[in-house]
Length: 464
Image (cartoon, rainbow, N blue to C red):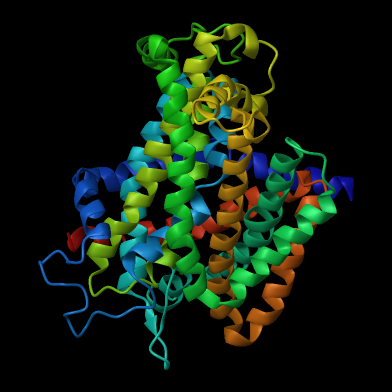
C-alpha cells in the first residue's frame, strides 16, 4: 500500500511541477495573444453581468432564441462559489511564505493571463452545449470532446476525474477546512462539525441546480464583501508601509535578494513557481470546471457568456488573491517580529489579529458589551467557513454535470449520498492522501481539456 501511495505522490508531483505549469501558462499566453488581449474587455463582461441588456442593446429575454437553465450571473456565481475558496486566503499566504512577496506578483500575472483561457473554454462549452427533451441544457468539456472532437474516451476520463475531484478537493478537503477554522476559535467535536456541514450541504443540493444557483447568487457577493472588507481595513491600518509593500512585491519578483526578514523566498525562481502554481490552482482557468457552469446560462451568445464567465478569473485571482497578498505582506513589513517563526498557514491569522484593537474600539464606540466583541482571527475563521461551504456546493454542481453525462439522472441520488458522506468524513479524517489524489485528478481534468482547447483554437479565434 505504501508503495502505491509513493507512486501516486510521485506522479502528482511530476504532473504539477514543470510540465503542467508550462502547458497551462503556455495556453494562457497563446489565447491572450491570439484573442488580441481579450482581458481588455473585462469592463464589458462586468457590465453584461449586471445589466439587463445584451451586447446588442436588447433586453435580456426579448429574443426568442435566448435559452438556458439559469441566468448568466447565476452561472458566474456558481463557478465563483467553486473557485473562490480557502486557496485564496491560506493558499496565497502559503505562496508568500514559500516564494517571498514576489509570489503575489506572479500569482497576479497568472490570473491576468488565465482570463483568456477561461473565455476560450467557456465559449466552446456554450456554443456546443446539448439541449435536452425537457428544454434544459447540458454542456461542458466532455460534451465538446465527444460530439465535436469525437473523443469519447477523453470525455469519459474528464467526467470521472470531475467526480473524483468533487468528492476530494470539492467536498472532503473543504469540510476539513471548515473544521479547522471552527477549531481555531473553539474546541468542538469534529464529528458535530462534520454532521452540521453534511446536513447543510444536503439541504442545499436536494433543491437541484436551480437551488444551488440561487444560494450562490447571494452567498458569493456576501462572503466576498465580508472578507475583502477585512482585508481593506487591514491595508488601511498598514497604509504607512503600503508603498514599501508594493516595492517589496516588485523587487522580490525580479530580485534574488530577500526583502522581508523571516520570509522563506530568497530566489526569483522560487517566487515565480510558487506564485504561478498558486494562481493556476486557485482560478481553475484551463481546468475545465468553469465551462460546466457557463453552459447552463440563459444566453443566445457564446461570446457574451464567455465575456461574463471570464470575469470570474478576474475576481478570483486578479482581485482576491492580490488584495490578500498585499494585506499579508504589509502586515509582515509592519510587524516583522510576529511573523519570524510563523508557519505558512498562520500568516493570514497573524495578519488579521492586528484588527483586534480596531474591533474593540468599534464595539466600545457603539457601547456594545465587551463580551460581544470579536477579534480579527474570528472574522477570518468566519470567512474561511463561508468560502469553504461555497466551494462545497459549487463543486457539487460540477459533480452533478459529470454524473449526468455518464449515467443520466438515475445516477444523481447515489452521487448525492456519496457527496454528503464525503463532506462528513472530511471533517473527521486526515486528508493528506485525499489532497494528493485531488491534485492528480485535477491534472486528469486539465490535460484533456487543454488538448480540446488547442484542437479547437481556430473555432474560438475565428468567431471574435
